[in-house]
Amino acid sequence: MLAYNQRKFLIVDDFSDFRSSVRSMLRELGVKDVDTADSGELALKMCAQKRYDFVLHDFNLGDGRKNGQHVLEDLMVDKLLSHESVFIMVTAENSQAMVMSALEWEPDAYLTKPFNRAGLAQRLEKLVQRKTLLKPILQALDRGLPNEVLAACTSLTEQDQRYAPLCLRYKADALRDLNQYDALEAFLKTILADRPTPWAYGALGSLLCKRKKYADAKELYERALKAFPMLPALYDGMADVLVALGDTQRAQGVLEDAVRLSPLAVRRQRLLGKLALDNKDFDSASKAYRHAVAQGQHSRFKDPETNLGFAQALISKNGDQGLDARSRLELNQTLGEVAKEHGQDQGLQVRTRLMKATSLKQSDPEMAAKLTQEAMGRLQGMDEFLSADAALAVAAQLQDLGQAEAGAGVLKSCAEIYGDDPVVMQSIASQTDDPAILGANKVAMDLNVQGVRSYKGGKLEEAQVLFRQALGLQPKNISFALNLAQSLLPAKGAAADAAKLEECRACLKMVGKMPDSDPRYERFQKMQIRAFGA
Image (cartoon, rainbow, N blue to C red; front, side, top):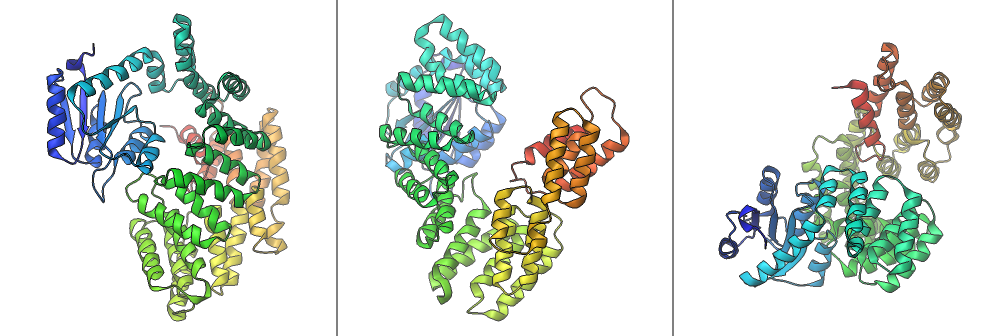
């Protein structure tokens, strides 16, 4: 029997009568600690201040507010809810869009309105039984210790083999977090050989894709989708594989199937918009981006790139005819939102002005020229680096607006910063054939490769010389600077060389200009802590 008097509950619903009704049910069950909230925003603040054992959260809290899915996303990503806690999505609606959307974040249960005390008690008892059984695993997850998760899984299975199926997914996630990819691949294949399981399909497909075994991943996802055609995450995985294989047309079609199943996923709609835009399917791109912008208003996955993608899709869709009245209104709203919410981000200020200038090139060339000049002025004064994708987009827009020299300058800077990435260089080559831009980084890249080889071989002094030479040729290259900084960091417990530590810090200061969306940003942060200390 659940000890209700020792548990803390939070009820989130926009109707006071419902909150009062559920609170009364819980009081009758013996619950003493019951809090309520009428909005997702308030619920998040309360969860940040107090640990709840149970959260009963209504899905729909009214237009213009966070819904249950948004709150669950925030709770999971920000780790405001213990793995031992129970999150129950409460809803009066059961549309496929809502159910599929929230299911992707895996609440512990659904509860459909109306319900009575007996039904609520029965559901709570079953959930707590499962959580109690898995308590050692869940506590290890809260501590972020995958080795302890594995040990807890082994211990539970040894107690009773009937518990083994409950441990499979936790064990797979722990192996993934420990980067034990060979063991994980073998483990997942064993699971699937015994019984086709959707999560195991998804985990193995993701792993194969990560290991660049694209043909194997494609075949696996094809089998998975035949067995489980109603799971959007499997479509996402297949789309990733197809993009890696260069089949963006089919990848778009796969994501369109996923969106039909679960249309409220912001990130999926955004990716679909980008794929369609790259495929020059501007109708589909504008539709997907429109959904992503609307659905992202109260989501943690709201992203100015979505707005910019939507604006680009609208411009491309209307072509030389110029924007119609509706498209002009949408473009102004979506760009205005970015400019207002990101006033301190000079890169975004540059890009919104260039986007607006592009939209006015035919209808108002004078205003387009003014906005272009404003953007170029801000660009020259920028201290931060544009991302590679943003730099490529800015260069293309400048060239389209008659500023070929400025566009070439952006491409040159992009090559200096990201020139070690062959995909970026290929994209740059699609915009220019200037050998001064395309060929300048080859020698530096060779030196960097040699430096990495020396570093791995323990020849630190030699590696530092090579990295310095590479960075001397490409002084803004992020990878070269990170590699040099890492080679200069003192080993743990060793005394620091003052001159080398200062050189390391100078490298990291330059690297700090990268956008925080760069995949190397986490590495930079860890090195910065070591270099600058407390």
